[in-house]
Image (cartoon, rainbow over all chains, first blue to last red; front, side, top):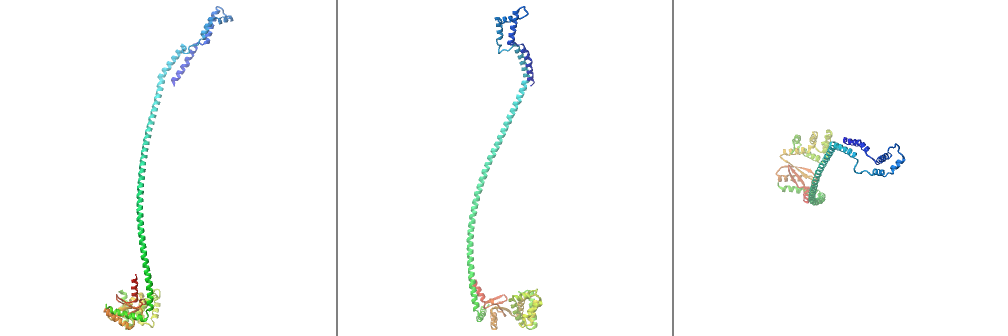
Length: 236
Length: 176
């Protein structure tokens, strides 16, 4: 910053003398014309229109004036400009070499270092991201493997359970059939027994009523006599 | 087997009846009353009901036996009821009958029949039992219509069943 400000001031300071010492086309023409006019008037103190007319139509003067009209070199500046410009350039070059370049170089180095650090950080981040991605991919692979294992295990368990349930169901059905058959047999036997008991009850009831109605006093007496004979005949 | 109080009461009844000199009549009357007592639920519950005044229960006994039994029998029954032993009356009478028969060196043969036995039948049955078991017995007849016909004789633990009921039961068993 300081070097840039000094170089600008030097250009402004040296530009003034350089432009004042230069000759423009107008000044060249005016100087040649005035010089020719003085030469033409000689000892006279006054310049007349005739003098001017005479000088203006003088071919020699015209040649000199035309020489003034010739264009300056577009490449080579005036010598003073070259001197002042070169000096300013050297001063500016020295200042830049001493101050500017190291500052720019430091800034560039710092920026390069920062860029390098950023690149390193980006590289590290990329590496980390790749590591994380690898972990995720590994975990995903593990999860897929685990899920496949669980699904297979569940399928095996389901098959086993289905088989067990089928076996149990068949056993249960067989047991129920046997029980039903046994129940039927038991009910059948019970029904037969109930029927037999009912029939025997009816028959015995009828027999009892017949016996009671037929047992008159004589029959009772004969039964007692028969009983006494039975006791006698039992003999212990 | 009668328990000790029952035997004690039976011995007391026997002593009184023997002292009064009408043991045989008292024995028959007590045996008959015991059969009635067992067969009649209302009589049994009334005589055994402690909530009924004793005087009323004794009056009931007197009314039932008036003219049908000796005063000794009525007094002995009243004594048992007054002592609160009405429910034990059948077993007391059984023990009394055994005791009485035992005093005559005889056993008691309880004969259950649908009708009463004649004297001739009782005599023949007594002889038949002696022939069959070798025991001298006194026959006590219990009228039991459920026997239907024939008779059932119990001598101690021995039972001789010749009833129509038994034959019907055998027939019932044969149906099963």
